[in-house]
Amino acid sequence: MKAFNIFILSCFIALFSAQASSASGTLKLYKGNLSSPEFNLTDMQGNKHSLSDYQGNIVLLQFWATYCTPCRKEMPTMNNLIKKMDGKPFKILTVNMAEAKPDVQKFIDQVPVDFPVLLDSDGAILSQWKVFAAPANFILDKKGNILFTLYGGIEWDSEEMVKKLSTLTSM
Image (tube, rainbow, N blue to C red; front, side):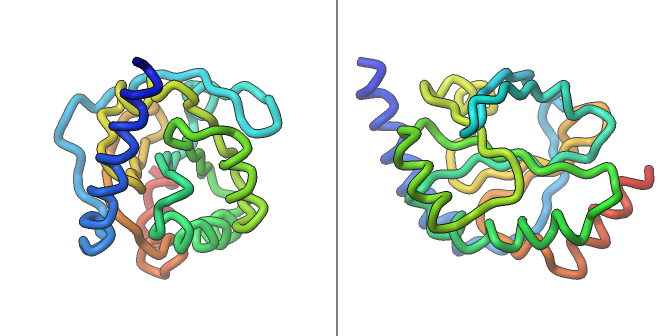
């Protein structure tokens, strides 16, 4: 039953992702509960990550899937963003949306990343964060509160985005 629910969720996300990818990529001020749900997940190398470990940094938290075309296009821009934000209190964390580790590894072999890829194998974190599209992005402040959201793809390394995120790191 759990596998069937994950399959249904994946189909829904794939359908919505196509719609979300056509949306303009702009950060939207988050209007829900600002405190972010804590999680403890393992990355592709078997290291454990807690969201609270990243407090003190502005965090770009992205939920993504291997079948998500905008995800594939924007991951290289996220690599560039990390380089442009070097020396600033800024981190990127990505959470794969309940896919098998071999599938995620195949994707990463094709699209290398310079940031942690965390595995949400049972989709529990997706549910806690109420993620319904890929990519789903959240910008967290230094205390771990959700500041902004963005559903759909964006060029993370654009001059405008680097400026916005740099401003947040100095607050």
